[in-house]
Image 1 (cartoon, rainbow, N blue to C red):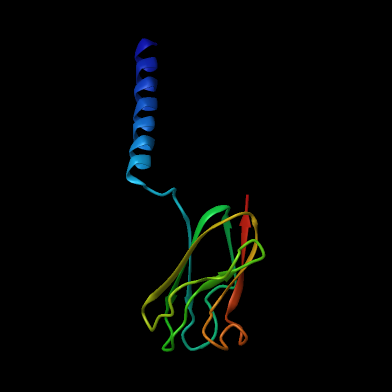
Image 2 (image 1 turned 60 degrees about the vertical axis):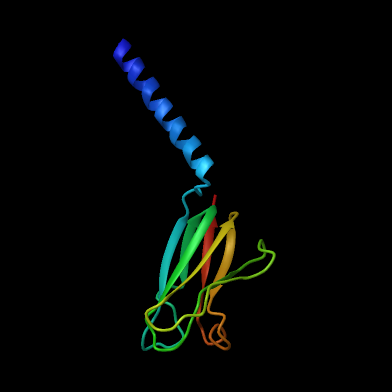
Length: 127
């Protein structure tokens, strides 16, 4: 019985030390990453139109599998301004990372005319 208490105490101290080390090094909390891609052949479409993630830091990573430039951007009523990923060419990745409260957001391509032509989707963030 004494060994199990010592083992639990050692485990708790290890966890505390790891948290302290992360705080001292500025390590970020884990993010909720979601991936999508620009669909080749369907010039103005993503591979998905619906995504979901838990509240907190959310990262959208869009791989451009198309031969024209695209990006991923995010907007919503709970955001002060849209967040834009870099516009990238074929084979490159556009990323947007934002800390989000629960709610509904729109991810879209901010290249002129792409969203209006259908390159958008809904991100649902839950508690």
